[in-house]
Structure formats: structure tokens, C-alpha cells
Image (cartoon, protein in one colour):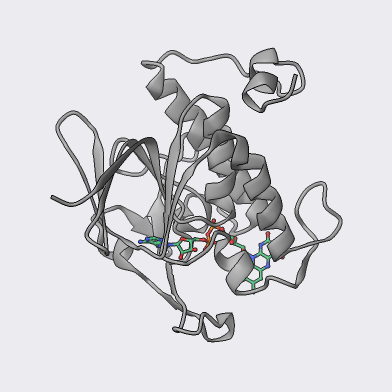
Length: 226
Ligand SMILES: Cc1cc2nc3c(=O)[nH]c(=O)nc-3n(C[C@H](O)[C@H](O)[C@H](O)COP(=O)(O)OP(=O)(O)OC[C@H]3O[C@@H](n4cnc5c(N)ncnc54)[C@H](O)[C@@H]3O)c2cc1C
């Protein structure tokens, strides 16, 4: 019997979209299992331009790819996400009760109540020496999954970021909707709205009021701040 890990939300990919989604879901008390075929978090930022300055991340006049990822990991850390690196998700199925099962290419399995596809442009295949210069970006198994697509990406409702499959969300470069721009700041917005919707579903459909991080005692405590 293969190993199986349970979490509230399975996230496929560990790029910037995924890392911000972990933080948002953590604020709502939901625990994530994040799976990436790479041996580290960061997606395109750490593979394609780790040392290049990025100038259009709000609040940072200049920040390079590695530093942005290091900060996103630090922001998500209080919520203790489970990371599985070096494994690709090769299949996703849901049962009659709506629970999702992901099959990984090492034969293990992971379960979650919701899935967020933050799989970017596809699966990175690094050569055995791990050198990013020769990184190959393959379409990966997600390209075969039966989901509605446009412009090579997965069609989502731009209000909830749900795909054509209930309980399956897509954010970041993996998704498409009218006006979609493949930028990190768009990925953060998409993560915020998808996670709000997951929060609502997890609460049985009850919409929760927005809590400001500046003002909420509950949030301060969940971050270990008093
Ligand atoms: C050269 C370059 C420069 C850029 N400069 C900027 C810039 O200045 N400003 C800006 O805002 N944006 C920039 N971008 C775009 C930005 O990098 C992307 O919008 C952003 O990385 C998207 O993040 P993401 O989390 O959606 O996906 P990604 O960063 O692509 O991460 C997706 C991850 O999912 C993993 N994955 C995929 N499929 C699977 C699977 N089946 N199983 C397990 N893991 C899987 C991949 O290995 C990858 O690590 C640039 C892009 C490039 C290529």
C-alpha cells in the first residue's frame, strides 16, 4: 500500500503563487501540502532568474528572484506547510465525497479536500547536476488532464479561480481568464481570491468577514505575534 499524506489543501507547484497561497490558507486555519518536481521552492524565480532584479513587485523597488522566494517562505513558515520536493504529481482524482487524491511519480499518494494548481508553465526538469542554465520546462502531466483550456492555460472563473472541476482551483501562470497577465503580482491576487473561496467552502458556504492582519488578534496569535 503506497504512503498517503493528508492535508486540507494540496498545492501542485511551489512557485510564488503557491507560496503566497500557503500563507493565506494558513490565516484561515487550513494546512497545505505542497508538491514540486523541483528539489526546492521558487519555480521560475529560482530556476530562470535567481539573481536578476525584479522591479514590479509592489512594495519592493528592486528584489531578485531568490530573495523574493526566501521572503515568501519566511512569511508562510508559521503555518508549517508540508513540502514534498523532487516528485511530480502525475494524476489527480476526486471521489464521490469530493476528496482529492494525487498520485506522485515516486508511487506515493497525497490527499486533500481541495486542490490548487500552481503549476506555472509546466514541470521543470533539471539535469542531474541541478544546473539551472540547462533547465528544461516540459508541459508535464497536467497538460493531459481533462480541464477546459485557453491560450495553453487552464480556464478559471476570475472571481473564485475555480476550474471546470469543482474543488480544483488554478492560480498563477497555470490559469487563464479574460485580461490575464503572467506576472507575480497577478499570481498574488489570484492566490488571495482562490483561498477566500476555499475558506468559504471549508466553512460550509458561509462567507466570513475580511479580517485585517493589522487589527485581528486571532491572526497575530496564529503568526506567533502577541
Ligand atoms: C526570464 C523571466 C523573467 C521574468 N521576469 C518577471 C518580472 O520581472 N516580474 C514579474 O512579475 N514576473 C516575471 N516573470 C514571470 C514570473 O516568473 C511568473 O509569472 C511566475 O513565476 C509565475 O509563478 P507561478 O507560481 O504561477 O509558477 P512557476 O514559477 O512557474 O512555478 C510552478 C512550479 O510548478 C511545478 N510543477 C509544474 N507541474 C508540476 C507537477 N505536475 N508536479 C509537481 N510540480 C509541478 C514546476 O516545477 C514549478 O516549480 C518572468 C519570467 C521569466 C521566464
